[in-house]
Length: 115
Ligand SMILES: [Zn+2]
Image (cartoon, rainbow, N blue to C red; front, side):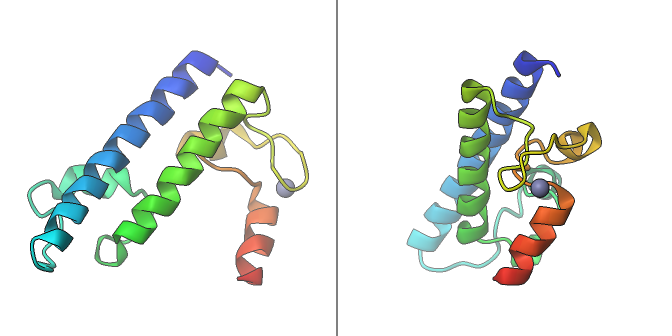
């Protein structure tokens, strides 16, 4: 795995999320206009990945942002790419699709079932 490439991908992702969050915050502060981020629908869709545009909210972006930050921390600590629950290496396709992924598919499903 190319750590440099992963780091820059995560940092780009984080910058995008920061931008989305600040747009949403501005709109929220300016009186609850709900037409979020309509000026860059394509950008926005790629920022939030599989999250549906209509469901996207500041909370979703914040949660994603902290996942990306955690991934950067794991990268620095040398544990990036391992499942935080079972410790197995995450498949490269998964990291490719979700560079901030912290669990393997099995553990993620178990984790989501618990919520
Ligand atoms: Zn796992």
